[in-house]
Image 1 (cartoon, rainbow, N blue to C red):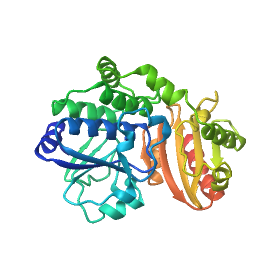
Image 2: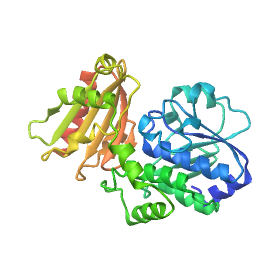
Image 3: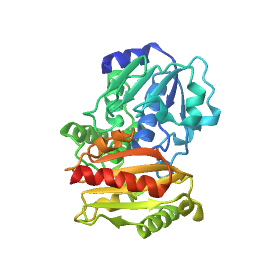
Image 4: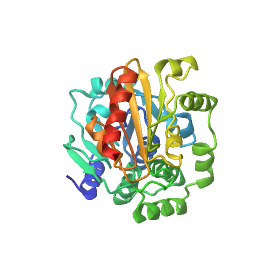
Length: 321
């Protein structure tokens, strides 16, 4: 594993970069990509950003989001590839993976545990609450002036991956970084309004569909919601992936573990896990080839929605029994 100083040196000694995040991007992914993008641009570097998936509309207030290009436009040549917030190469999604299949990854920056580093230079810090926290330290190491635009991006990254600083991955260091970002110009009112008080009609409709299909274990300690492919298709929300719906399961008093089963393609199920802290849902997700954190994790499985749901619920029951 490399140090922040070694990663900074490689960034300073190279000129052309492609920044790639994971498919179905969340706030940490988007905010980290944009923060690093602006930092490298300020250092005179040539930088492009790519995603396999659209930038969710709640992040359109962040400067530069429209510079993130779709996977179809990715044609790697001599650029150095940087992967952010990706526990493995496959997290970038099939479209991007096909385009970088024969290209080495130059730098891998993440805060999720990784079985095996996959880049020439790797910085993985599971004690960091978010990849955005790491990018903040990296930009300081390359002596980039953190502008209000960069501060907004990194603040959003940290805010979303800590669940508004309520998840137990929030550390004193996290809070100090957030405070410094506010000092540097991060607009907390703008973040609050855009991230939490600007729900789209689609998100409300999708929440309604999910709540129609909420269920509980016999003892009330497990709650789960389900969204079939047809549920999303019926309201034209197949490409819509809101981050907050699953949290409604964790708001229920008796519930210890909440889950959201979403069929994102026919017989391809994205599973979200949330815990109030006693149960390590990251361990459950890892057993399903996923990952995450103790209180928030995810995985993907293939199969019929009903079969995947039944199998995973049994796994969770076995863990908390």
